[in-house]
Image 1 (cartoon, rainbow, N blue to C red):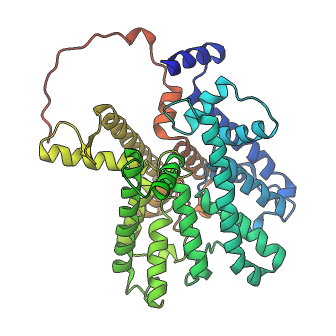
Image 2: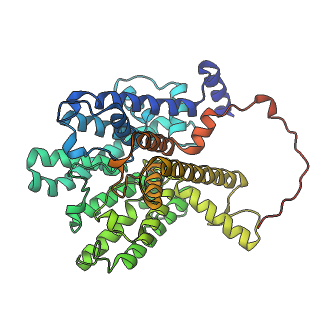
Image 3: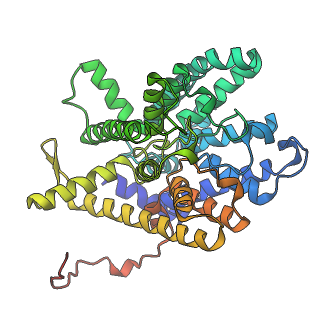
Length: 457
């Protein structure tokens, strides 16, 4: 009841919904970032990179995707790289989370309007405890990124020297945790030089997984270690953890089996390298975008499995994209319920409401429709095979950043289309529809039409 009253007050004052404001904020940040990246000072040749290229890079940064049209490590100056990593940090944590951090540092009180926006950006159900949750998210994020930067530095400092090695550590810790996938290695190589490096692989995977679980799941994991029990954690966290573990293990086993004798990927690696690379390429599509293997050398089944993992993505309320693990889990549970003849899906002795089922179906349908439509449009504007374009589109929608080395070859129209796809994938396809849908208030009555039947199957 409090939320309904608060939202009514908010809507009357601003005449704009929190969803619309969150979407608008992301768009504004993208255009501001594009302006900065198009400055001559951002490029090493002291020439503007071109607004479309700057817009593509800014969108990829804010939407924590990782697709690039110019090499991050060699094209951009330190100024440009700082802009990129700042956009990644803001986009990963969320604009309202970062705004709240600065407000708290300045000692300013968080207003009701800002609390509603935080609630929307973090996908929370209640207003209570939002500021405390935001504080914990900020503290945990910077702590995890600091630890990740230190671990990265153990490898990068010997390779690049103290100053550059530490900078590399900080940059890759932020981009890994935010599931962005940008790298400074150069020459579009990502982490391929470190395919056998234990520290780089494990540290990157852990940062990706932690960033992709979702902030509310962090709290429940803390309670698991504190209480040493799984009983008191929320159903959402149980579903997310089980789905995440299953996808990682299933993807790793699939890649290991299919790529084992592929001379372009796993065949020439030691057994430990095969295992590391298999797990890395199972985790990265969810939705980080780093790669330690040559993506173009992967077999067709592995590419298609990667597309599936990218489409699912991470978990709600996280730095990841895709339709989310919870959505995929609800859809699978719904299919199981239909097969068993049950009216509603069930898991862990709890039933899932039809409202959540309809919402999951809507998200999946809109997302799949978007990916199919964009792939069809790109097939008209680009000179590439279907699988390459399908892969590129799904990567953009899932805010992953993996590519079959086609991003730099996109036409101007293709870059704009992929930029829009990345934006839609970050803010969420359902949020976009709700943000711009004009629903007539006069059609909200209790009128129900007679029920009838349609033959299915």
